[in-house]
Length: 366
Ligand SMILES: O=C(O)CCC(=O)C(=O)O
Image (cartoon, rainbow, N blue to C red; front, side, top):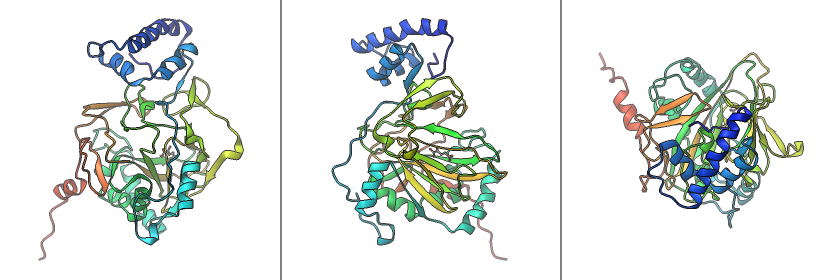
């Protein structure tokens, strides 16, 4: 069963409606889920009442974009760890992050370094990922030591730690090859990444009201309004919005538009120079306009969580409707980005050890 948000013909919606009502009743009555087929079990387990109700009362034309949650403002704006002064966030910056949902840009790398790295990224754009066996910009940090080194830069990790705590994992990365004349990435938001197949979340935070994940987004090229820099809608991490199926807008393979107040005074267009980065919560509505230039706009990101957040939970495959299908997880793992993982809740990869194994043998001096 594929219930992923898309506008279906009326007769299909008419058929799905009683099924959904039945599943809702099943959930309300706490009937055993073990006997259900996998997809149905996922729905009964992971959708909350609000998700069911939104679909049912809209006649399957609207849904929450992800598992609903409301942001609870932390009681303190003090950093969660002490770091070297050069990477310190002031309480005002932390307060600003909690109010806006994003922070930056900050500088991590020299522009020349990024100009050189650009060549490496372009060289792998159309190559198969060693992790997944098909061409994808996702999780290349698991096979690209240079990318992993950049993500571990203290300018990044020390700032993330002040917002998330000392022990951090990277569970996903993505390279954004925004090609010449590439279309916009429409405004979107995510919470536990259930948005990807609408059956299973990717991450399982103990409390969805916390900031349980941050994205760090690093510009390899200058990102400008002309080539599609990031845009944020200030303060919209307060809650998860609904989407309307169908319509003109598209998000990778899906067609929907996010329902939010498009009050332009809250939309922040954020140019970022090559080598700079931005930190944001994926719950803050964000996107990027079209690239109107004839040159790629390259960037990479990482999704970072504290070690008490499990990822994928022993799954062998993970489905993402947007990015074209199934990701086999045998070669995937979370990687410790900072501190130590005392929880051990997810499959883990020691990237440094893996890179040592696959590095070419040192050349002997003649
Ligand atoms: O790079 C972009 O244009 C979009 C980035 C994005 O949506 C993300 O990092 O979550």
